[in-house]
Image 1: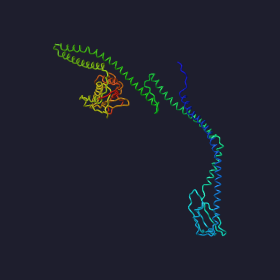
Image 2: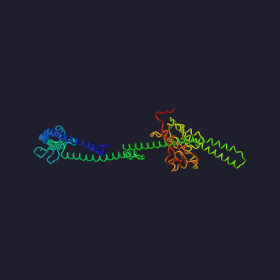
Image 3: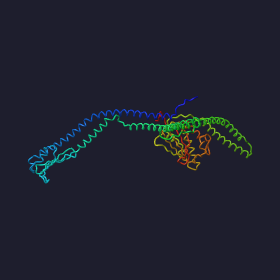
Image 4: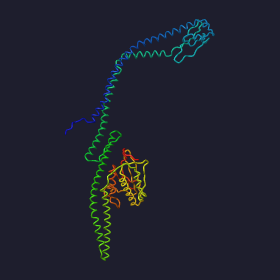
Length: 496
């Protein structure tokens, strides 16, 4: 099968990013240039229409200054002809004259020696005004009339600014574009730099993205090739890292499901073997027991030594037959486990019922959560699982020389929709060599027992949709910790 050659994803992403960056910039360059020309034309026309108006304003300013000067000279000439001024009359009402004459702020009649015969003034109207003094001779005797007028302090500055505005308007009227050539060149350089930056960033970002995607694809291929322990490592907080985490979670769930299925398959084989063994062993036990009993009871001789041998042999056979019967019962139990009939049950009630057994109650310590927990489980089978774990925990503590106390705790995990039940003992823990096969049938660390209890308990937990595992670390009590996980009550379940 031939595959059509396609462009690499990295090149596609880079080209797309460059186009996204360059297209609006190029369009902006064209539009800005056109807008600059239009704005320059509008500004030139507007400036031309304003030049004549501003030139007339300058002429008006100049005329106003000349008129003001002539007005001041006329007032000075007229006042200098007053008889009372010529006589330097000190009683003349200068304040009234100041109020009557426009712009006049102060009057002083000065004798020939410069001393004031009479004078009056009013305050300056403000900083925007300045004083202009006009001296006019009084008669021929050397006396002087000193008049102080208020004139605008900013008239010269206003004229200067108006001139500058006219010069600027003339400059604008000659401009045909609002963008200097250097600006346009700089904008083109900016376009090139932006394109290179976009290409560089695109190459880096797309390389980072494609490497992460390749990691996902590579891990998926490893899993498809049979490397079920392969996992993807994607750091960060982005969507791909979240996808990688979800992918790893899926692989973990698949691996756990596969392990559980393999375990159930092995247990199915053991169940079939157990049923056959129970049938094959049970049938000859009764004839053997009857035959030995008959042999012992039919001896009528006086040989004490032989009689004792027969009695001892009978007791040994009876004891072994009883052990075989217990083994057959265990086989029958393994081969005929009932189906799980799950229903919503309060977990605390199940554990409280276990305390009804006095031998269990004296060893049992509960660590319940703050809020009640409801699970979907088969009550009888769940009690069987917990009873087996508690019994094993008691034996482990006693074999270690402790009191055999057991701590049972449970807590809900709504995020995973499960509840976990922990059973902690005071024993020596499970040896490292036995941890891998601890749940296999006929594997036990106790001095007594068949090794089927944990196997049956885990099978029941798996059939509930959960699991039974041995915690990797020791329990807070110092012994082993077994953890049962069960599904929480479903949305369609309810309790009274």
